[in-house]
Image: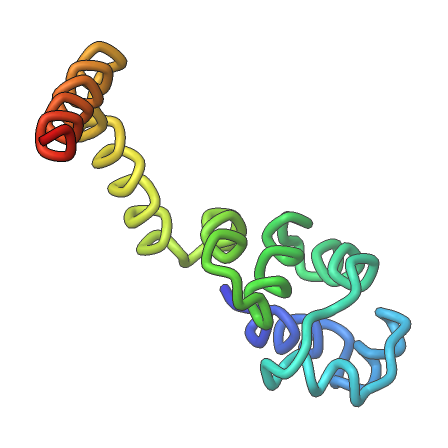
Length: 126
């Protein structure tokens, strides 16, 4: 569920978007901008919204952060907390498994370093 859907669920519970904005302690414009993807919600409003719609607080905070966050590492951190982002979780797990499987052991890394150093010193020594 993304923040837009969460705001819509909150609006349905309070009657309308204006009532939801009042419940969250926000101006209606701030809620409209969050719903439209132009900004996130303050963390306290995320907590109140989570309680209202029966969602996990981290899910709402993460959905709000994903609205505007540009840093891929931060987006990857928040994505697993948002239900419906199973695809993102799958990609993150695949990346972790790939790194673990393809990363050399400490001994292999040391051997490759020594081989590279030998090649470099041999090529540049003459």
